[in-house]
Image 1 (cartoon, helix red, strand yellow):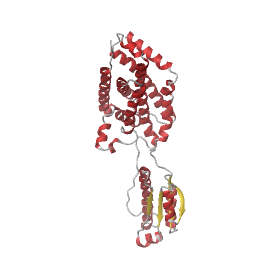
Image 2 (cartoon, rainbow, N blue to C red):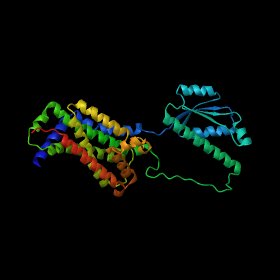
Image 3 (cartoon, rainbow, N blue to C red):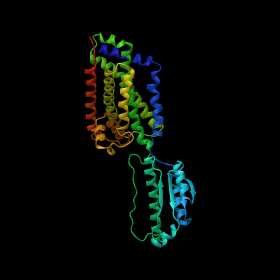
Image 4 (cartoon, helix red, strand yellow):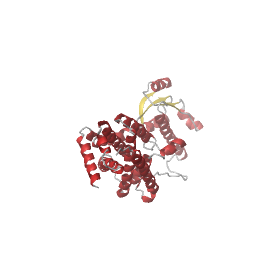
Length: 373
């Protein structure tokens, strides 16, 4: 125990002695958590639309008013030239062009049907798909209102109808940052602990101080614990700062689940991620090598673990890879506990999986650490 305490004292002195690394550990993650949820936003609003109205009727004006009143669209141009609208799409001034044909109102009244043309700029596939979906919903709602007025001119319903009232659970206002903040916090803690832990050992290799440790009677597990525990404590501190300061006071996210359960899972998860950092360091002789390996792994963690998109929509091979990554499970657990208030029974399998990750990664790190003594 005295040997381990000596190693821990050495590691903390080494970490806090480096004035350049302290902002990277404590300030940069908090700044990223403040900014990234605002930037990493898949909500599509203020879609620029150009309306080409050849009818100029009361119905066409009502439809345009409904589109303009929507929070998703911004009426960029109103005219009577479809070719002008297409040129605006080509110059990226608008995202959609809605063409209302001549006799739009007359055809609706006489023939009970009429056509509309929607041209969509599909360079940005996500924005195009959502924009087309939004405008289709507005047109369908407009169509339903017209039919209701025709059936009931006095505005009083004379036939049964279905009243649909959606109820959004766990995020009632559908605020995208509420969904993103827990996932981004997991990603930041993961990057911080794995990067810093890997670079810490490799730096000692470069300056040669690790050779002095190798010729001492220090055991492998003592050396590993001495490297792991300081960053484990730092990871707990940064996660707490992000969850109870930034998430609560900046984004208004108040955890609804059991915090003892969350921190129990976090403690095991940090051991697994630090084991990954230690394992990377055993394969690297320079900080550049360690950063290159860690960068490749972190990129996979960022894009294939459900941080931005659901893993259920991935191809089978990508879904299989996502289920082999520890970050996938922690993102799910944090969102389930912080937003949903899940219990131990809901995440019991996640606990077993992360314990397996911790044992495997740290076991490989201890086995692969070459100590000459």
